[in-house]
Length: 70
Image (tube, rainbow, N blue to C red; front, side, top):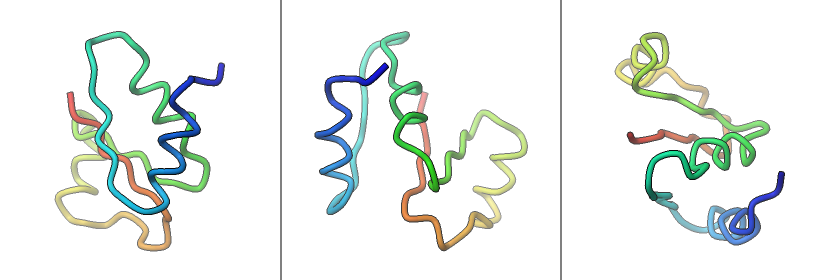
């Protein structure tokens, strides 16, 4: 399902950092995952992702890296 903010966020991501916040269970994570195709999604709550973040070992070719904050 396409979110009403998806186009605005995609446009903003072309030129700046975007912080997406809101109450629990409103679809922030779902929206982030919809925005990624060739992008990297790293969740600090995941043990494997945390290791990648701490070691700064994500691919540098990714046009977008998403770090969700809970």
